[in-house]
Picture (tube, rainbow, N blue to C red):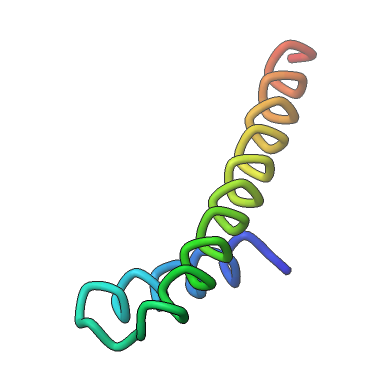
Length: 59
């Protein structure tokens, strides 16, 4: 899943949480998924940041 796809899914989950669309059981499951998506986004951002720093160091 790309960063953009992960972020879009996360935004969708947050919107549904804010609007109260989930039952208590669904809320727990969606919160777990949101945590995983946040982790994936952080990993991708850190990797990209590292790659950019390496490129800038070479120039």
